[in-house]
Image (cartoon, rainbow, N blue to C red; front, top):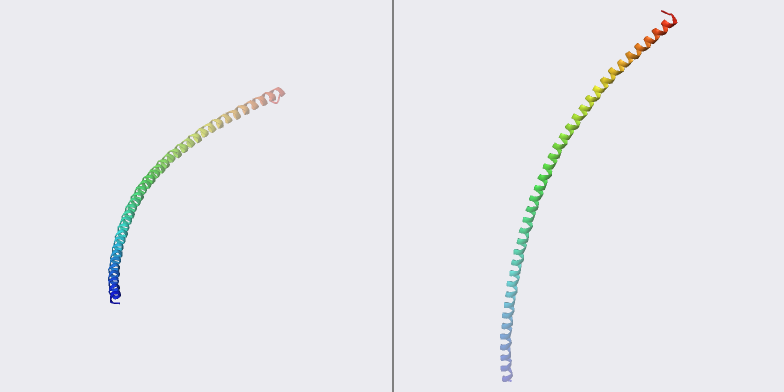
Length: 138
């Protein structure tokens, strides 16, 4: 019996040592897992930071390009507006010149019409005078 108790004590001692070894191994494993997770979190955080920096740089570049494009559009609008103003001025000038030419032509026609009217009136008066002379009214 003493021998059995002795063996049980040894077995208990071995189990305790094995339990300590398992606990130490689990603790080391947990430490390694924690260190790996921390490294992974740091790497992910670092990579996310890089990605955010790239996104910010891309946004700034895009914003800058959009600003340039807006400036070009504004300059183009101003140039087009200026050109349209010039075109409107030319149209107004041509319209005025055409109106003046029409007025001059209308004045010529009025003179021609009056001359024609005077000529025809004189011709009719002359014919009536001849008719009166032929008929002996005068």
